[in-house]
Length: 317
Image (cartoon, rainbow, N blue to C red; front, side, top):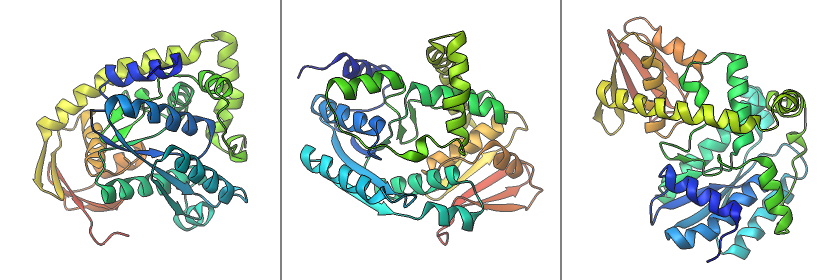
């Protein structure tokens, strides 16, 4: 099979960072936009090389009238490529209001909850999303603005637990060229352009200013991130030193009162296939008094002197 330069670049990135293994079963998160449709097309080709099994998960977010159209569009693409299609419909605005969180956070939580549940039901190995180099740069900028530690400067990583991001090595411009050259259809989401959302303010107001200073600023952020990825490997080692799995549903974390505590705790969430809490939530957990406890993202966390006991809450919704 002949691969295009765009596909070769992703193929090399997958090999370099050992993102997928031969015979992996991969759930692709596909919204229908140019990013995720590029992921679907590219992975459909690479699946023959790696002998991968692919399925697609699509969250109908109910945020606009065209959501049903997007769902039908992705379903038809999957049918054409002979890829199994799974869909779930949620009301993001309603969820955001009930949980008192922003729409961006609500959408992310619902999306990943759906992805993780589907992964488990299918007994698949990994979830792949279409995050790219521009997303990586924007995430790092966002985290710097909000305040982040060294670990957070990684922005995103190629593989974190079961979460895979094989397109971090390509820019949005490269994706746009790929769909244009190959005449690949996709849908647009008007919320991608709304300046009500922080990410879009960065993309359309801050990033262009950075591009004036350095036209290849995304690559600079990529180099920064790749350096931090090496640091995260060290965090994994700390996790193995400090965390003991007491049973299938529980981990015991030894706290050392250093900056690795927060990183190890966040990594524990990923071991449970849960999206990690942000830095503020993590800090609240670490500052709990002895015998204190919190329920967070379906996990119960109890403080016992210098230990945290993290247990899956089977009663959580």
